[in-house]
Image (cartoon, rainbow, N blue to C red):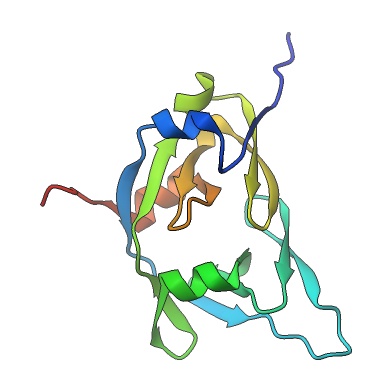
Length: 160
């Protein structure tokens, strides 16, 4: 048995320019709560993600979850959340802009390769075969679970 080295990806990496990112529209309604601790409380908190990583949530950021899985949470930067989510009723949101996805296997060539992705909220390590690489409205990147993409995203034909 041999060990593979970890691959690291950051938002500004040249390799992202050549990936076949495809546009998708989100069809999932989500809950979100803004993290607003009092002045004498810690101004950051760690959020355990559904994929097992811990990410930092700062004052003003949003804690987002799926409606049917409120314990599966992740932080979203305040500016990005406010630019990309539309409130459809109190505490319930849908994502407005398109999400662009490329299979992580297109980067690694190996579905078992562990990939370290530097997101805005922290560093996440995932198995390439289980995730897409997502790119957002400001060029930010994050891992997007393949099984979730199959059930919550709709491919968009940009030539329509």
